[in-house]
Image 1 (tube, helix red, strand yellow):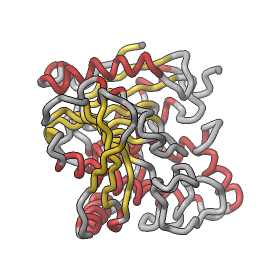
Image 2: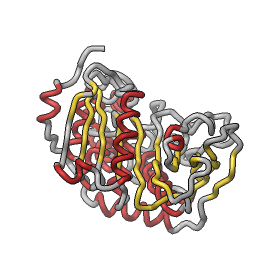
Image 3: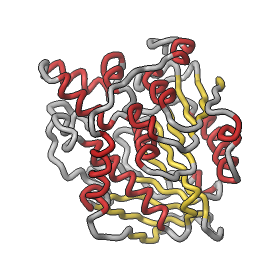
Image 4: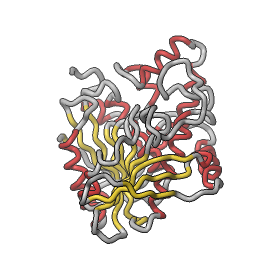
Length: 337
């Protein structure tokens, strides 16, 4: 897995000038206002997973246009709340899976919400979240869905679902609303960055190898999907490049990241051909709050894996115990892992 992008020194010096769409803040304020106007409360149904130390609930939250978004809530059994909470968003093509699969954060003593990503779960599973909009792109995948218009784009719906999921977590009696951290790997990392930009008052954000950052550059240099979906689409629709990237600028997590203020812990892998490191560094450098970074020089898209989970566990423990050291001492920090 050779390096195919900029060197680490070049990435650290990178300061991309990304164009922000006119009316971007109004676009998202209107989108979220419309979603909140739909009636309906989150539902939590107990699930028997066979686990004795974690209590799990099947979650349904009114998301974009009030449409039901599924997920899981894991709570440490026998621990009284309100608890610090980790809200997790998933990678590209991954649904929420089985209720017993992802219980790390509950075992660490936190409430753990996992959001199903609309349209990306198992097609035969009754608990999936469907995407209610028709497939408008001519290339398989989600990145080109509705790419002709910001109002119709797939990630407008997903980002709205994610904000509403965090709002549902804040309202849950087991959760301390002031101690919520959002996280995710790849697509989930891009969603977490967008949520951090669109949701004030978060305690922290942990984007790992984030997708949806500096999307135009990703479409130009990435060697593997999903960014290659855009290159394929534009190879067929040669006259639509400016229209496509004008749409995608509304959901570019590196553009939105400048609006986020919560402390952040990023991970970036220098041999990542799915989310090239320069695109991730674009989001890191533009991030508006205090930030810390772990760089994995010899890893691909898996980034830090279990090693980085350990870093996250330590970071969240310190963060939710009080003011994070990075937030008190320096606006940014970096080290190789």
